[in-house]
Image 1 (tube, rainbow, N blue to C red):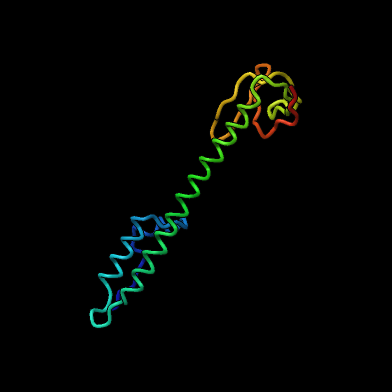
Image 2 (cartoon, rainbow, N blue to C red):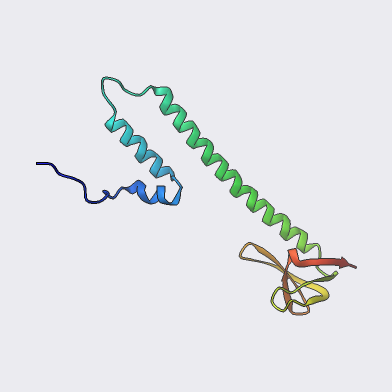
Length: 133
């Protein structure tokens, strides 16, 4: 009697592959599966495992570096905006579409966007078009 598959067997890696991302846990699960199902008479070469681990370590290092760079960039933008405190500035209010000008009285971070306040109106730092004393 022949049995055919009706559907795909759920796998913990399916969600990761669908998202196009492989987490550290997924990687080690996959590595354990490879070890468990390899041919004992013809095992994989150790250099292949070392190569896979090195690639994954490099990927993790790049992710960490990217995160650190994002934090650095945010800090730089906040420092740049802080230098505007007390100065006259002009910029576009994204909500009204009007140009706003006045003395910069506050600076804050909102969802990774640096906001500059002048005349009780907040605009993103990237919308500031002119600064004067």
